[in-house]
Length: 245
Image (tube, rainbow, N blue to C red):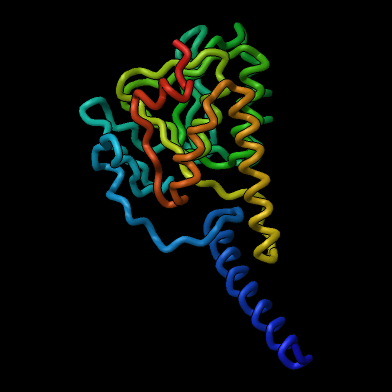
């Protein structure tokens, strides 16, 4: 190949990387992390009921409205995880999962007397890394996790829920998974961004194995784009080990 041809080929590769990199950065700016570009959701609205083989729904963490009638509308949640007492042994943990929340909530749990036995969890998701850190803390301290009928746990939230020493979901609770973005906001070549995503997925799989969750649940997460959510059916929740009672 001539020097001119090689130069043209290199320019073509560089141009391709710039296009992919631009799309990644655009997604990064919109979500606060690195993820692969998408072309918009094609699934029905989250208000549409799910059934076997039809479980992917559009997902916007700022406007989560799953079809949970007639149980109750969970309403708007705090932007960051909030810990409030239900009774002497059970506390409610709900809201978005933001950077720094794992350490903040762990410190707050250490202050509670008597120590909480269970956390009732509800969240549209957020930072995967924080969900894994806090989930490991719950497991190490022996705190259980619960979900109530009519409430939801999506995106990174199921990883937090999986950290419970024991886990219980009332009939009508909604658990959902999808692809995630990983890393911090930065301009990266496409191959480095993909490597970062793969490393993050490996960390999630290691964590799920530690928590006793069947890794086959990742087939649904990896096959569902970030602007959609795969809502797990009750038999899948049981099959993948999310519920222990």
